[in-house]
Amino acid sequence: MSKVSYYTEEGLKKLRAELDQLRDVERPKASQDIADARDKGDLSENAEYDAAKEAQGMLEMRISKLEEVVANARVIDESQLDTSKVLIHSKVRLKNTKMNKEMTYKLVAQSEADLKAGKISVDSPIGKGLLGKKAGDTAEIEVPNGIITFEILEVFRD
Image (cartoon, rainbow, N blue to C red; front, side, top):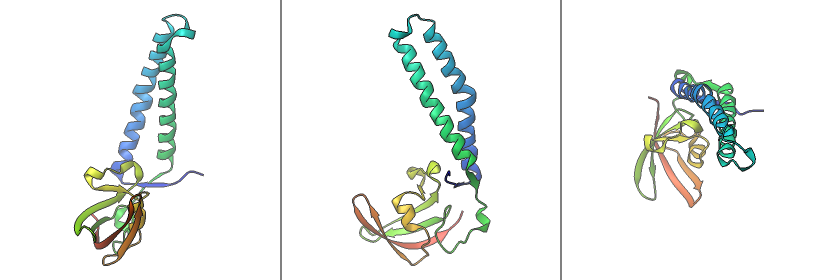
């Protein structure tokens, strides 16, 4: 059974665009690369042919994975979500109590995560540790290099 993932309308649109690009542009190009390599002679010693076949295999795996993700994707109506606690698509302003540093993150699906844009995955250790917390709560989150304590300052939506 596949895992359901929740996306914004924009996030799902990006996934579908990438899938369309791979199926409609990259797949025919990969087939053409294989045909071109096959035309160069003996396949047993043809490195171009082997490379083209391997690239096609990787492309097909990516297409298959994206098709599965899109098939199991659900768009979230953010207006229906509880704004008092941290859920997917919540923005969280928090403070690292050890470093006394404030930061703001938006919790998103794994494929939408972009740390530079302040978007972290709900499947990441920090994302999992924040889920369900409310403003004023403290979250002790185990990360690869120890335990970080965050104070949840504010939970809000865009």
